[in-house]
Length: 312
Image (cartoon, rainbow, N blue to C red; front, top):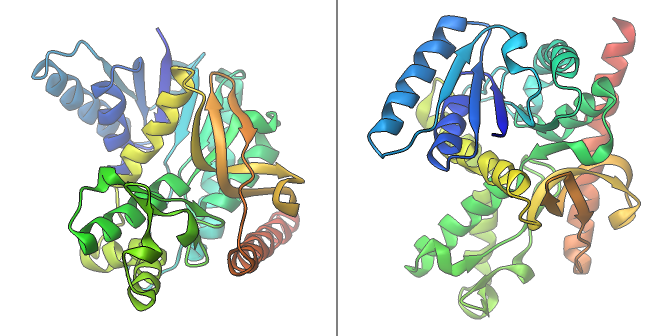
């Protein structure tokens, strides 16, 4: 049986555990520095599985030894945004949290695939890659799936269609400089430019870019968790079931899209070994310019973090 460890028993981690257990992807270990929190949620989730005739088991713990030999480790731990905060505001505090976590993950699961959810995710996954020493194929960030789902939601609402009929793609940074690709967005095979006005499309794109902040401002005490928890398990499922599925993820670019040495959100094929291939898609001049700006922001934020780390 495959073993999935989820680090962080907060809202995102707990909902990821529920999704993984519901899909019966393997034995789920939910770890948190508050071991009682992890144990309590794990028991509750496992008991809920009995109600849907599932034999899935979730184990709660505060001990990294219980995560040993995991196939996949999902890191959701870290501080969430509050109203008025951007993801970038979490940079230094979450970097410190992740650095200590990753060292313990590597000790107990040196062959695992790491999936990072903690914000700002593009820089956090770069940090995890450097600290872990893992090959680039085994370190991935969750971003574009969530952003693409939000893109689908807004278009479906505007056109009064099912979200399942909408195809979207979002590249770049997981933040306000993300790049929703209008020309790659279709509803039942029809481009949205033929269905919506230019003004409406631009408004939807802005809503996608600020969708996380909208939820933070409404919740007031945290950030989104249902959609992020489900989004990351799409990645876990694609890997553990060797689906060779193309999903938008934050992956290491080694020349693709003209970018080298940086984790950026692009479509990638996921399978049993992690990232199998980066898919390069055509970008319009406008999209390419926005993508370049997004990458520059990721690089600047990473440089800022590295300067801080070098002083410590």
